[in-house]
Amino acid sequence: YEKLGGTPVIFCGPVEVDPSVIEKASMRIKVLNAPASAVAACRRISFMEEAATDGVSFPPVSADPPKTGGRWIVKNVLSAGGTGIREDNGKQLRGGEYRQQFVEGFSMGASFLSTNTETALMGISRHIKSCADHFGPKEFQYAGFLYPYPAEVSAETLYILQRFGQRVSSAAGIVGWWGADFITNDNSVFLLEINPRFTASMELLARAHGIDLVGTQVAALENQIRLKPNLIKKNTLTYGTAVCYSKKDCVFNGARKWFEQNARDIPHDGKNILKGEPILSLYAVSGSPEGCMDELVEKAGKLYESFL
Image (cartoon, rainbow, N blue to C red; front, top):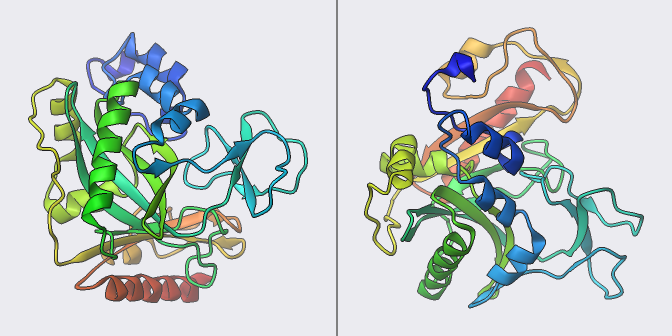
């Protein structure tokens, strides 16, 4: 901390989900994350259950093997991006884990910006469904996003999400950018997770609308920004990002080439990458969701052909 001097910091994963780290750091340096108390609240299952009202549902959870039918999965209260999620086999859970009923539908991420008094729904992205044929992730692993949400979202759902954002930010004391993940099916909205932090999809929202994420974060924390109830903007282009995971143990090469093709999170040439580890992130922009997805798939194919 002494080396940072007065430089503000934003913690990223996995530190960002640990309220004790944020709290201790905030005593010595300026931290631009949501308050530690907000992080702690949003990781409590009881808080998510209480937040799931007024049009939002929370899938049933259980510590014991479920007595009802259907598909169940195991999650961890500190997991993010699908890390550690697996099918429930009825065995004893590890520390911090819980069982949750699986809900079919489309997965989406909502981005919110909150001040001490207001919250605005800033954008909705759609998760790319895990597809081993294209990007190599496991079923529940983070694969990427398309922004804006490529399916028509009803006005009713927008109002439900806006009210949810205001309700959660007020109850948890969230200030700044934050997000929540949902499943939608048959006009029903199910809460999966609340993330009181910058989320992966926000970089697409920022690109699409020219938003300074850090600048607005600082302004929100200092209560120097005025928000309208709903700031979702229309956009004729679709922005996409996908994470490619290695399908086998390999050695990465071609860093400069992939940087010039707008890939990011690129490893150094010669780095050993194990099967299942992320390689890099791909980006695409298109006039349609289908075109954006096709471009990401094409780039991923070239990546795997080049050295895997």
